[in-house]
Image (cartoon, rainbow, N blue to C red; front, side, top):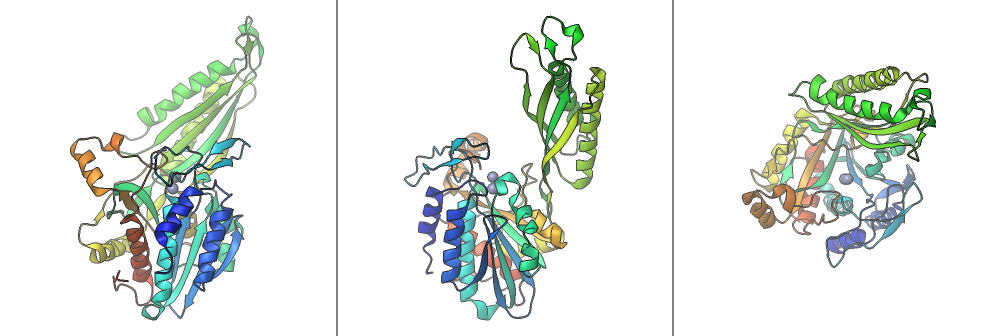
Length: 413
Ligand code: ZN
Ligand code: ZN
């Protein structure tokens, strides 16, 4: 290995960058790609980087890693903890931390590319690697697609990616079918008629309208969705009014919706719209409410055939029992856009970064939920080893499995 992956990870961790601002990270990626002699283009979808290794006839395998960090103040106490700050889209100065492990994703990907370049005589085909910006905004994949990544690079036969998660280091979590939920972020604006707080009869009160709407929206999951199905309807923000004696003219709600598939998505969206309109009508509102979609993330659905094949390859490479079914996550990802756009299979897996002993103790004492910091926590602190090594090996095993002479399962140096 010529890339010092531990040093690379620590450097990335110390210098996290917010979504669509990953210029330093992209520069480091570009430097390593140059050193490895890999052809690449920068600035795709603002700060994205895409690279290609052409190695004769064979399948085109896309590997994806995301690069962005979060507005979180790191509290891990680690020697290499981030003290970085950044400016968020609202113009506010915020702390920045790699609290979701995307620094580990970039590190593992560069380690894997180095290995794949060094073993080019053992495989054939094409590897396209996407270093994606702004996953945390759910916008980076679409930005790269809109910027022509599919025209500028060979189209995939399969898309592969991985995410760090609070499983024990050395463990891989993957399941066929829905791995992560679909999600929509909506802004609902309710229009009333403003006036004096002492004369409610002359107004249409949007505060009451908003309150009734929030309560009624809760009945979607509790009363309308089959209890065996998964759905989430969260109203994460509600804003109306400035003063106690003024009835405001409007109210806004921000909703986060989650579902396992496109059919469930349509059903929940239809119910949200029906309730919002009906509550406005019930309040006597004369201006219909507006519902704006701020972002849409598709479900992350693992192709059953490819996932079964890869699970077998992982168990062969790492030892039987390495792969567990982590269940469906209600979190969402934008990696699927690449596979959906190309109409090809996706396999997206999770790999553990928690000290196995710490994980076992927490499990034994029933404190798994409280003792193990999850992604987005200010205490999120994956152990460096064997997390880095397993992340590299998993990408190499997966890429090799779907390339022309793949399936060797070899993870030796
Ligand atoms: Zn995240
Ligand atoms: Zn993430």
